[in-house]
Length: 119
Image (cartoon, rainbow, N blue to C red; front, side, top):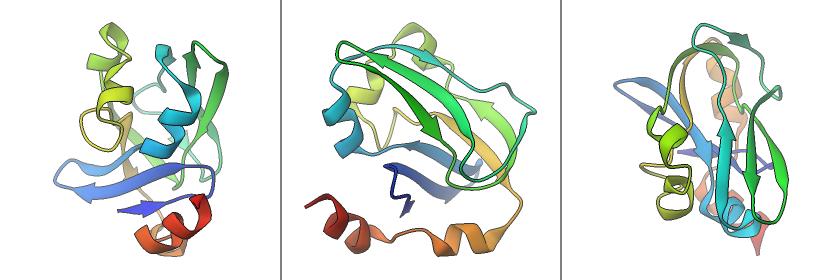
């Protein structure tokens, strides 16, 4: 798992590269009440705003940490956006992407680098 400075994470698995927000980010936002997910098939570039999360505190743009094509979105979040609060780094994932540039993944923070940023 790798992390962006803007509190998104990306993890490679059998589905492709899975993207979400960190536990730290969800705790700062508060209770998530609505999510606008990207469209499957969209081509996006690292740093693009791809989702909007609305919480009881604020609305926040979510940026993709890597470039590629959206393969799938977490449909469960449309019915239950609070999954992000319960399991931000597991069941609360946002979308999967077919990553087009492996070097972007390698340039992201590892777990210890991200932990140093948030303390």
